[in-house]
Amino acid sequence: MTNLVLNNSVRFLGLVLLQVLILNNLNLFGFINPMVYIIWVILFPIRKNQSTFLILSFLLGLTVDFFSNSGGINAGATLLIAYLRLPILRAVLKKYDFDFLLFNLRTISFGKAFLFISILTLIHHVTVFSLEYFSINSYQTIISNTILTSIFTIILSILGIILFTKKK
Image (cartoon, rainbow, N blue to C red):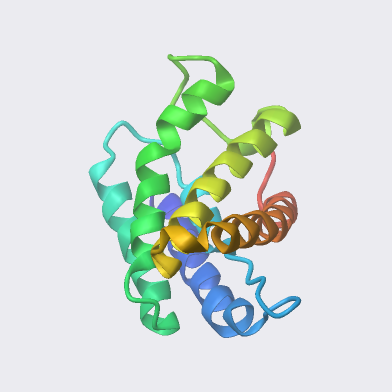
């Protein structure tokens, strides 16, 4: 149990530092800013008790907001994907009873893992950019920023998961 807590704490700190120190200062093509801190939400162990996970996800987004001066949009988007993670996983796997304690993202097929990561990333980014622009007149900007940023976030997330997680 303590090993699991330590791993998640190190992952939390590492992803926040990577996001706020490197990726927030990296604007590809002037506006693409990958948001890989959401990997923490994707990789967090699935439990039946969601309250601690939701609080920690909110704190993750709030920490990124604090260092990014973004006014809570990352906290809201991160909390949303944390809340929707289990229903989306059930829909992607087409199973309603799977072992919560032994689930590992690396044990499912690449296609299902890719779909799961892509759906959560798109939901997160649509939420972030919708709250950032907060105007129906900016729908083209919201859609283009969501798609382009999601592509880079998904690529970096999958590479990070493959390189830095163990396959069980």
